[in-house]
Image (cartoon, rainbow, N blue to C red):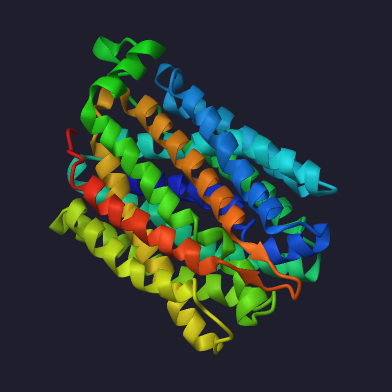
Length: 394
């Protein structure tokens, strides 16, 4: 019962964290129209959060194992809620950009803390299943959070979703105070926290840790070159209205709400590397279709985008299980913070690169998405080769 309640609360934390990042992408058409900004400027709004999260996550690696997990989570989540409130109150593009940087500084650490707590509290034989439940927060954000947020934005304005997130965050923060246990963590050799240089030396010295970080980098580059421009191209090229974008996240999120726990059980049964390979290979099909879509019936679009959500989310579950298991418990918090940093920086780089490749034409359409798709495919195939070289040690 305690384990289930802990996983539910961690999933709620991830729900708000993921939704805070995700909502920028479906709001893209509205923000580009209201602020009159280019694709590159829009990608800056997306990448600002992740770049900040990456930089702060790297710094957090040097102290995250020195502070009890619960105490750290309380402080970091409070900062995240305040940053989300600042986004809600933003009067224009530059204020919103700076608010995204502030929010990302705390949001990046949240992911590392959640994964570290799962690694500390859940035995290895149930860890992939637990990861599947945590990753279901992505599905819940898609099926519940994004449609509701888009509805709020359509009937009021783009500020409303961030007010909603900040309000929900207050209740979750109170839940952290009450329900997250004080976990036993070694914090280093013989209970002594590792010094910053020891952490760096360990990662540099151990090939397995370097490989796990490389897997994160390539996987995020492959995924987030595509994702930020799904919504803008659906409106500009395929013929969707801004209100119809809700259907994409509603259907995709609803399906992945059930598929994510199932993928976790598959990974526990057949092995994380094998399941990761299956899902990466299958993901190539919707990537090709999505990046080459022209005006298309909505039912076909929803089938393709939902398939993409299932397989792209599905490959993350065995990958996170592999990465979490590649590090020994005594430095899991520090390593997962470094991993989160790499993840966020790679996500920021992917959005930025995609923004440079994409071109906004005079008629409002967007060009060069197929080139972005080809880049994503190459990176996805490379991630399979890297994942096979990650070894589980804990």
